[in-house]
Image 1: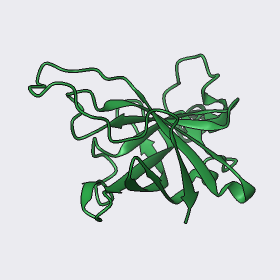
Image 2: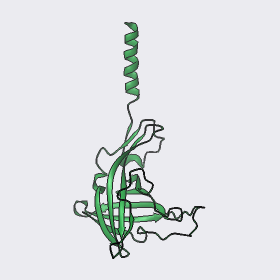
Image 3: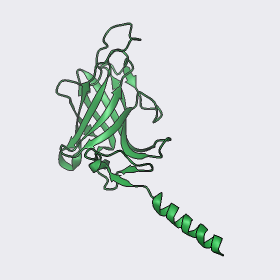
Image 4: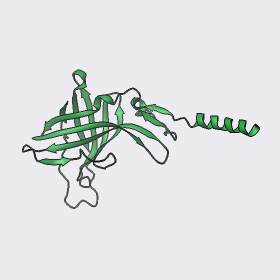
Length: 188
């Protein structure tokens, strides 16, 4: 009987101590501590919902289609979970020829634009980008923000890191995402 009571107490204590710490997505940027094992950066207030959907626009004589989804990523080493955004895209020229298409890539593909954090003060979201010529400078951070009636407009631009790696043999690649002034997109 004594062993049963001790086992129950240990199980209760373990259950309570293993409960994940919830950090709201909108507070993550200000969170200045190391995340504890089992923490969950959660979109409990649906602040990422306004970014989710299909967005279309034109820039530099090209048509762009961006599909934004919310995704929960779990890290394997410390059981951390993150609600974040992923963006897949298709770019076509004026003749309709496809220049780039990542729409059917899996979530963990390096060419899927991968969310990092919400900038609560500006109500924008930052994502990490690696283009098909990433080793030659097609890399950086994508910034998105929504505006307009019912959040039906999005502003998107790329802040280029432009890092060129040793395996680049062709020189700096031309950027395919908008850099100067960004672009406006409309929710479909």
